[in-house]
Length: 425
Length: 166
Image (cartoon, rainbow over all chains, first blue to last red; front, top):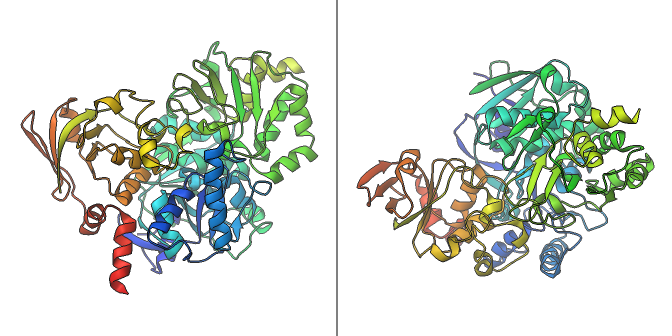
């Protein structure tokens, strides 16, 4: 029996030639990641056992203040300070201060710190994003992070894999976000529980790398341990420009075992929207009638990259945000922000009446920069629409791709982008 | 490792955002954080829970964010253990790592009503609904996981092992 790409990467990090699903293994990590919410909890654990100066490798730890940074209040400032001091004291090479930082899952690949074949753990559930580059990456908690910081190791159960094959050509306005929302709508929020989600097929190959990050990013929203894709020319081109280290390409064997194989014809898939309060409550945007919105958010580790901003700009150019709606756009990293500025996208956004924020996770988790009041409703390109996720317990979040969010901001209600772009021509 | 308490029941897909909303994640002190445990799902939780109570969830308990604050506030609230039809994987790891006993058992969950008195044996993987006089068998944990829970979490376990090696 052959192995999946996930099995092969794990095997390589245990030093074995074969690992089987269900096997408990202790793996060596290539990168351990924490942020301003999760790293302080890990650091506290390290201090309890007197190990706060025993990092296993200062080049293989990444610390990014992105959730409540720039500091939203005094308590958050204190958490950021705990992480900053730990980084300085241990000479952590990949600590990214405000001004250098970005949303962690956009930042690490952009900086070439995650490459194909890597095994990465992060104390953030969306660490699964890097599977888009053919790496095994998974979210853990703060204690796992603490243990990895001093040992360089983490225990894992080798996951079973499911395979999702996307066939056909995407319609206009349909993106990687729509494919992953559609998939979660089909299999449910626990449809891939404990498993590896392997995305394949011609429609995935046709996606930009940015859209592939979006898909792998939301694997956790189906309960998956990791999302992963095979490497192609686009991946190699992306990685070669950035990689800070050599990399290894793994592909699944033809006779690898999958517990389920799903096949979707993307020709019939429309832009999707996930209704409150679960990412599996997915409907085509055309089925939504007269849902007014108070706020639209374009950004996050899911959809704050160049492709996302360009998609939004196509819709917003020459249009105005509805007077009763707030549009908040958050480039995911400083270099994305700068590139958007050079391409004239920021000007389009501001002329449309959007506000542009410094990189932060901010409103996605109801932290800052766009928290919702009681009874308010938002459309967002983020990843979760749980109860109270963006603010008040009686607020609502609808999830979509950037074009839909931008068009909805213009109309003040959830609409298909065609409604805006057609009327603009 | 036997835990006995009254059941506080919730449905499927209880996410970590409702267990501890992100607006409180800037709080460093676990006792202070625990004042907001379950707040966005059940604002009465804080008043009705008593020491030793057992939280009973449906499928995919603890889905969403990796925040370890979620199992921490449950533990600090005095909940003795959590049983569910299934757990989201990061919550599952985190609960073990901080020494919060958990057990998956779909059959037991289907029968439990709020307020039932339950007895859970983590080592044996046995659950007894004393109120309804029913017994269930779940998958127990391997010895090293039991040991982690007994020591109160992974760091204590690791520190002790490191100490004994030296």
